[in-house]
Length: 349
Image 1 (cartoon, one colour):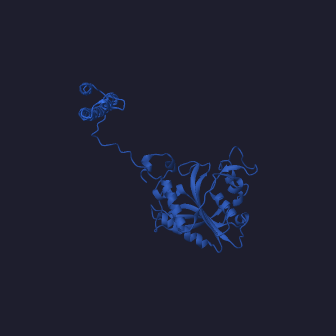
Image 2 (cartoon, rainbow, N blue to C red):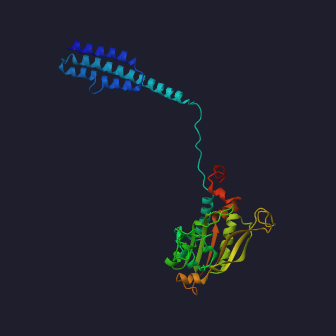
Image 3 (cartoon, rainbow, N blue to C red):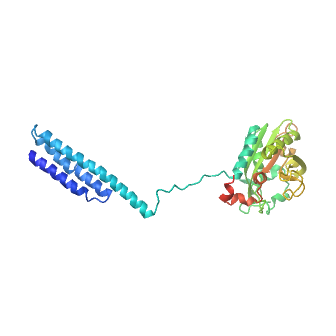
Protein backbone atom coordinates (compact mmCIF):
# COMPACT_ATOMS: atom_id res chain seq x y z
CA UNK A 1 0.00 0.00 0.00
CA UNK A 2 2.83 2.36 0.88
CA UNK A 3 4.70 1.65 -2.35
CA UNK A 4 1.52 2.15 -4.41
CA UNK A 5 0.85 5.60 -2.93
CA UNK A 6 4.48 6.68 -3.35
CA UNK A 7 4.34 5.58 -7.01
CA UNK A 8 1.15 7.64 -7.58
CA UNK A 9 2.77 10.69 -5.96
CA UNK A 10 5.86 10.39 -8.14
CA UNK A 11 3.68 9.91 -11.23
CA UNK A 12 1.73 13.10 -10.38
CA UNK A 13 5.01 15.01 -9.97
CA UNK A 14 6.27 13.89 -13.39
CA UNK A 15 2.95 14.63 -15.09
CA UNK A 16 2.81 18.07 -13.47
CA UNK A 17 6.35 18.87 -14.63
CA UNK A 18 5.44 18.05 -18.24
CA UNK A 19 2.12 19.95 -18.06
CA UNK A 20 3.70 23.10 -16.62
CA UNK A 21 5.99 23.33 -19.62
CA UNK A 22 3.04 23.47 -22.05
CA UNK A 23 0.68 26.09 -20.59
CA UNK A 24 0.22 29.23 -22.71
CA UNK A 25 -2.30 31.28 -20.72
CA UNK A 26 -3.53 31.90 -17.20
CA UNK A 27 -6.86 30.17 -17.75
CA UNK A 28 -5.16 26.82 -18.50
CA UNK A 29 -2.90 27.30 -15.49
CA UNK A 30 -5.80 27.92 -13.13
CA UNK A 31 -7.71 24.88 -14.44
CA UNK A 32 -4.63 22.71 -13.84
CA UNK A 33 -4.19 24.06 -10.30
CA UNK A 34 -7.77 23.07 -9.43
CA UNK A 35 -7.44 19.69 -11.19
CA UNK A 36 -4.28 18.77 -9.27
CA UNK A 37 -4.42 20.62 -5.93
CA UNK A 38 -8.09 21.46 -5.43
CA UNK A 39 -10.40 19.93 -2.84
CA UNK A 40 -11.29 17.21 -5.33
CA UNK A 41 -7.90 17.24 -7.09
CA UNK A 42 -5.70 14.23 -7.88
CA UNK A 43 -3.16 14.87 -5.12
CA UNK A 44 -5.95 15.39 -2.58
CA UNK A 45 -7.39 11.99 -3.54
CA UNK A 46 -4.00 10.38 -2.99
CA UNK A 47 -3.72 11.92 0.48
CA UNK A 48 -7.06 10.41 1.44
CA UNK A 49 -5.35 6.99 1.21
CA UNK A 50 -3.13 7.83 4.19
CA UNK A 51 -5.84 6.56 6.54
CA UNK A 52 -5.20 3.01 5.30
CA UNK A 53 -1.49 3.03 6.14
CA UNK A 54 0.19 1.82 9.27
CA UNK A 55 1.29 4.47 11.80
CA UNK A 56 4.91 3.84 10.74
CA UNK A 57 4.31 4.38 6.98
CA UNK A 58 1.89 7.31 7.26
CA UNK A 59 4.52 10.07 7.99
CA UNK A 60 6.78 8.87 5.16
CA UNK A 61 4.03 9.01 2.52
CA UNK A 62 2.62 12.30 3.92
CA UNK A 63 6.03 13.94 3.76
CA UNK A 64 6.53 12.81 0.15
CA UNK A 65 3.10 14.15 -0.81
CA UNK A 66 3.72 17.52 0.89
CA UNK A 67 7.10 17.85 -0.81
CA UNK A 68 5.55 17.28 -4.22
CA UNK A 69 2.72 19.72 -3.40
CA UNK A 70 5.18 22.47 -2.33
CA UNK A 71 7.32 21.91 -5.43
CA UNK A 72 4.33 22.16 -7.77
CA UNK A 73 2.93 25.25 -6.01
CA UNK A 74 6.30 27.03 -6.29
CA UNK A 75 6.44 26.28 -10.03
CA UNK A 76 2.83 27.47 -10.44
CA UNK A 77 3.70 30.85 -8.83
CA UNK A 78 6.67 31.37 -11.12
CA UNK A 79 4.75 30.35 -14.22
CA UNK A 80 1.78 32.57 -13.26
CA UNK A 81 4.01 35.65 -13.02
CA UNK A 82 5.60 34.79 -16.37
CA UNK A 83 2.23 34.43 -18.08
CA UNK A 84 0.90 37.67 -16.51
CA UNK A 85 3.90 39.59 -17.79
CA UNK A 86 3.42 38.03 -21.20
CA UNK A 87 -0.24 39.07 -21.28
CA UNK A 88 0.61 42.67 -20.35
CA UNK A 89 3.29 42.80 -23.01
CA UNK A 90 0.85 41.50 -25.62
CA UNK A 91 -1.76 44.07 -24.58
CA UNK A 92 0.67 46.99 -24.82
CA UNK A 93 2.01 45.72 -28.12
CA UNK A 94 -1.47 45.38 -29.61
CA UNK A 95 -2.43 48.91 -28.56
CA UNK A 96 0.90 50.44 -29.55
CA UNK A 97 1.35 51.94 -26.09
CA UNK A 98 4.73 53.15 -24.96
CA UNK A 99 4.56 52.57 -21.20
CA UNK A 100 7.66 54.74 -20.69
CA UNK A 101 5.77 57.86 -21.78
CA UNK A 102 4.27 60.11 -19.06
CA UNK A 103 0.49 59.94 -18.52
CA UNK A 104 -1.88 62.32 -20.24
CA UNK A 105 -2.87 65.42 -18.28
CA UNK A 106 -6.67 65.50 -17.95
CA UNK A 107 -6.60 69.17 -17.01
CA UNK A 108 -8.52 70.91 -14.26
CA UNK A 109 -11.85 72.69 -14.27
CA UNK A 110 -12.39 76.44 -14.07
CA UNK A 111 -15.03 78.56 -12.36
CA UNK A 112 -17.20 80.37 -14.89
CA UNK A 113 -16.65 84.16 -14.75
CA UNK A 114 -20.37 84.74 -14.11
CA UNK A 115 -20.25 82.35 -11.15
CA UNK A 116 -17.20 84.15 -9.80
CA UNK A 117 -18.80 87.59 -10.08
CA UNK A 118 -22.15 86.41 -8.71
CA UNK A 119 -20.42 84.86 -5.70
CA UNK A 120 -18.41 88.04 -5.12
CA UNK A 121 -21.60 90.14 -5.21
CA UNK A 122 -23.43 87.81 -2.81
CA UNK A 123 -20.47 87.75 -0.42
CA UNK A 124 -20.37 91.56 -0.29
CA UNK A 125 -24.02 91.90 0.67
CA UNK A 126 -23.99 88.90 3.04
CA UNK A 127 -21.19 90.62 4.94
CA UNK A 128 -23.48 93.64 5.35
CA UNK A 129 -26.23 91.52 6.89
CA UNK A 130 -28.39 90.93 3.80
CA UNK A 131 -30.06 87.57 3.18
CA UNK A 132 -30.33 85.74 -0.15
CA UNK A 133 -33.79 84.89 -1.52
CA UNK A 134 -34.81 83.07 -4.71
CA UNK A 135 -38.05 82.73 -6.65
CA UNK A 136 -39.59 81.07 -9.75
CA UNK A 137 -38.46 81.95 -13.28
CA UNK A 138 -42.05 81.65 -14.55
CA UNK A 139 -44.12 84.43 -13.03
CA UNK A 140 -47.58 85.95 -13.27
CA UNK A 141 -48.23 89.41 -14.66
CA UNK A 142 -49.22 90.51 -11.17
CA UNK A 143 -45.87 89.77 -9.49
CA UNK A 144 -43.76 90.81 -12.47
CA UNK A 145 -45.56 94.09 -13.31
CA UNK A 146 -48.75 95.04 -11.49
CA UNK A 147 -47.48 94.79 -7.91
CA UNK A 148 -44.40 96.77 -8.94
CA UNK A 149 -46.43 99.80 -10.06
CA UNK A 150 -46.01 99.10 -13.78
CA UNK A 151 -48.97 100.67 -15.64
CA UNK A 152 -50.89 98.48 -18.07
CA UNK A 153 -49.46 100.33 -21.07
CA UNK A 154 -45.81 100.15 -19.96
CA UNK A 155 -43.50 99.11 -22.88
CA UNK A 156 -42.02 96.25 -20.85
CA UNK A 157 -45.37 94.46 -21.08
CA UNK A 158 -45.27 94.37 -24.88
CA UNK A 159 -44.58 91.11 -26.74
CA UNK A 160 -41.35 92.45 -28.22
CA UNK A 161 -39.83 92.71 -24.73
CA UNK A 162 -41.51 90.01 -22.62
CA UNK A 163 -41.71 86.26 -23.21
CA UNK A 164 -45.26 85.15 -22.45
CA UNK A 165 -46.03 81.47 -21.85
CA UNK A 166 -48.28 79.53 -24.23
CA UNK A 167 -49.65 82.58 -26.03
CA UNK A 168 -51.14 83.67 -22.72
CA UNK A 169 -50.23 87.32 -23.27
CA UNK A 170 -51.72 90.48 -21.84
CA UNK A 171 -54.46 91.65 -21.58
CA UNK A 172 -55.67 88.16 -20.52
CA UNK A 173 -56.16 87.92 -16.72
CA UNK A 174 -52.84 87.41 -14.93
CA UNK A 175 -50.92 85.88 -17.89
CA UNK A 176 -47.87 83.73 -17.24
CA UNK A 177 -44.47 84.93 -18.44
CA UNK A 178 -40.73 84.52 -18.01
CA UNK A 179 -39.73 87.12 -15.45
CA UNK A 180 -38.07 90.21 -16.90
CA UNK A 181 -36.31 90.99 -13.59
CA UNK A 182 -35.94 89.41 -10.15
CA UNK A 183 -38.13 92.09 -8.52
CA UNK A 184 -41.04 89.61 -8.13
CA UNK A 185 -38.94 87.91 -5.45
CA UNK A 186 -38.98 91.18 -3.51
CA UNK A 187 -42.79 91.33 -3.72
CA UNK A 188 -43.15 87.74 -2.55
CA UNK A 189 -40.77 88.39 0.35
CA UNK A 190 -42.55 91.57 1.48
CA UNK A 191 -45.91 89.80 1.35
CA UNK A 192 -44.64 87.00 3.60
CA UNK A 193 -42.29 88.90 5.88
CA UNK A 194 -42.68 92.11 7.86
CA UNK A 195 -39.90 94.72 8.06
CA UNK A 196 -37.07 95.01 8.73
CA UNK A 197 -36.10 93.38 5.41
CA UNK A 198 -32.54 93.25 4.11
CA UNK A 199 -32.37 91.00 1.06
CA UNK A 200 -30.83 90.33 -2.33
CA UNK A 201 -32.37 88.11 -5.00
CA UNK A 202 -30.01 86.70 -7.66
CA UNK A 203 -31.24 84.72 -10.64
CA UNK A 204 -31.81 84.40 -14.38
CA UNK A 205 -34.14 86.82 -16.18
CA UNK A 206 -35.48 86.91 -19.74
CA UNK A 207 -36.06 89.66 -22.30
CA UNK A 208 -36.39 89.66 -26.07
CA UNK A 209 -33.07 91.39 -26.70
CA UNK A 210 -29.98 90.01 -28.46
CA UNK A 211 -26.77 91.78 -29.51
CA UNK A 212 -23.14 92.11 -28.35
CA UNK A 213 -24.20 93.69 -25.03
CA UNK A 214 -27.61 92.03 -24.50
CA UNK A 215 -28.83 88.45 -24.27
CA UNK A 216 -32.36 86.94 -24.22
CA UNK A 217 -31.35 85.28 -20.96
CA UNK A 218 -29.05 86.99 -18.49
CA UNK A 219 -28.52 87.22 -14.73
CA UNK A 220 -29.47 89.86 -12.22
CA UNK A 221 -28.89 90.56 -8.57
CA UNK A 222 -31.50 92.86 -7.09
CA UNK A 223 -31.47 94.18 -3.55
CA UNK A 224 -34.02 95.59 -1.13
CA UNK A 225 -33.81 97.25 2.26
CA UNK A 226 -37.02 98.18 4.10
CA UNK A 227 -36.96 99.52 7.63
CA UNK A 228 -37.81 102.62 9.63
CA UNK A 229 -35.86 105.78 8.76
CA UNK A 230 -34.20 104.41 5.61
CA UNK A 231 -32.95 107.36 3.52
CA UNK A 232 -31.36 107.91 0.12
CA UNK A 233 -28.05 108.46 1.91
CA UNK A 234 -28.12 104.79 2.99
CA UNK A 235 -28.56 103.80 -0.66
CA UNK A 236 -25.67 106.00 -1.79
CA UNK A 237 -23.36 104.77 0.94
CA UNK A 238 -23.95 101.07 0.33
CA UNK A 239 -23.79 101.24 -3.48
CA UNK A 240 -20.70 103.47 -3.43
CA UNK A 241 -18.96 100.94 -1.16
CA UNK A 242 -20.12 98.12 -3.44
CA UNK A 243 -18.76 99.76 -6.61
CA UNK A 244 -15.41 100.55 -5.03
CA UNK A 245 -15.15 97.02 -3.60
CA UNK A 246 -15.82 95.47 -7.00
CA UNK A 247 -13.71 97.84 -9.14
CA UNK A 248 -11.22 99.52 -6.81
CA UNK A 249 -11.23 102.37 -4.31
CA UNK A 250 -9.93 104.79 -6.93
CA UNK A 251 -13.19 104.55 -8.91
CA UNK A 252 -15.55 107.49 -8.65
CA UNK A 253 -19.30 106.91 -8.37
CA UNK A 254 -22.12 109.21 -9.48
CA UNK A 255 -25.91 109.05 -9.26
CA UNK A 256 -28.03 110.44 -12.12
CA UNK A 257 -31.79 111.03 -11.83
CA UNK A 258 -33.79 108.40 -13.72
CA UNK A 259 -37.27 106.88 -13.84
CA UNK A 260 -38.36 103.42 -12.76
CA UNK A 261 -42.04 102.74 -11.98
CA UNK A 262 -41.30 100.99 -8.69
CA UNK A 263 -39.03 103.65 -7.12
CA UNK A 264 -39.30 107.38 -6.41
CA UNK A 265 -36.89 109.03 -6.70
CA UNK A 266 -34.92 106.80 -9.06
CA UNK A 267 -31.29 106.95 -10.16
CA UNK A 268 -28.82 105.46 -12.58
CA UNK A 269 -25.46 104.65 -10.98
CA UNK A 270 -22.25 105.20 -12.97
CA UNK A 271 -18.59 104.52 -12.24
CA UNK A 272 -15.63 106.36 -13.72
CA UNK A 273 -14.07 104.62 -16.70
CA UNK A 274 -11.12 102.49 -15.63
CA UNK A 275 -9.42 102.77 -19.04
CA UNK A 276 -9.18 106.54 -19.27
CA UNK A 277 -9.65 107.41 -15.58
CA UNK A 278 -12.64 109.58 -16.41
CA UNK A 279 -10.99 111.61 -19.18
CA UNK A 280 -13.06 110.11 -22.01
CA UNK A 281 -12.34 107.33 -24.51
CA UNK A 282 -14.11 105.05 -27.01
CA UNK A 283 -15.07 102.58 -24.26
CA UNK A 284 -17.01 105.15 -22.23
CA UNK A 285 -18.28 107.08 -25.25
CA UNK A 286 -16.10 110.06 -24.47
CA UNK A 287 -17.78 111.19 -21.25
CA UNK A 288 -15.58 109.26 -18.78
CA UNK A 289 -18.44 107.32 -17.12
CA UNK A 290 -19.86 103.79 -17.41
CA UNK A 291 -23.44 102.93 -16.41
CA UNK A 292 -23.50 100.05 -13.97
CA UNK A 293 -26.91 99.71 -12.24
CA UNK A 294 -30.25 101.31 -11.42
CA UNK A 295 -31.63 102.13 -7.98
CA UNK A 296 -34.02 104.29 -5.98
CA UNK A 297 -36.32 104.63 -2.99
CA UNK A 298 -39.18 102.12 -2.97
CA UNK A 299 -42.35 103.73 -4.29
CA UNK A 300 -45.09 104.15 -1.65
CA UNK A 301 -47.57 102.43 -3.99
CA UNK A 302 -45.41 99.29 -3.92
CA UNK A 303 -45.31 99.29 -0.10
CA UNK A 304 -49.09 99.76 0.06
CA UNK A 305 -49.59 96.83 -2.36
CA UNK A 306 -47.78 94.48 0.01
CA UNK A 307 -49.55 95.89 3.11
CA UNK A 308 -46.53 97.77 4.50
CA UNK A 309 -47.31 101.20 5.89
CA UNK A 310 -45.30 103.77 3.83
CA UNK A 311 -45.74 106.34 6.61
CA UNK A 312 -43.87 104.10 9.04
CA UNK A 313 -41.45 102.30 6.75
CA UNK A 314 -39.24 103.41 3.88
CA UNK A 315 -36.75 101.50 1.79
CA UNK A 316 -34.51 101.43 -1.21
CA UNK A 317 -34.07 98.94 -4.03
CA UNK A 318 -31.44 98.39 -6.70
CA UNK A 319 -30.80 96.03 -9.59
CA UNK A 320 -27.66 95.12 -11.48
CA UNK A 321 -26.78 92.78 -14.32
CA UNK A 322 -24.15 90.19 -13.44
CA UNK A 323 -22.98 90.04 -17.06
CA UNK A 324 -22.64 93.83 -17.09
CA UNK A 325 -20.49 93.76 -13.95
CA UNK A 326 -18.35 90.94 -15.34
CA UNK A 327 -17.83 92.72 -18.67
CA UNK A 328 -16.68 95.89 -16.94
CA UNK A 329 -14.59 94.03 -14.36
CA UNK A 330 -12.72 91.86 -16.87
CA UNK A 331 -12.78 94.10 -19.95
CA UNK A 332 -15.04 91.81 -22.03
CA UNK A 333 -16.68 93.46 -25.05
CA UNK A 334 -19.12 90.75 -26.18
CA UNK A 335 -21.71 89.22 -23.82
CA UNK A 336 -22.06 86.16 -26.05
CA UNK A 337 -18.63 84.92 -24.95
CA UNK A 338 -20.15 83.93 -21.61
CA UNK A 339 -22.42 81.33 -23.26
CA UNK A 340 -20.21 79.79 -25.96
CA UNK A 341 -18.39 77.34 -23.64
CA UNK A 342 -15.04 78.17 -25.28
CA UNK A 343 -12.34 76.91 -22.92
CA UNK A 344 -9.82 79.33 -24.42
CA UNK A 345 -11.97 82.09 -22.96
CA UNK A 346 -13.12 80.42 -19.73
CA UNK A 347 -9.71 79.18 -18.57
CA UNK A 348 -8.52 82.78 -18.24
CA UNK A 349 -10.54 83.16 -15.06
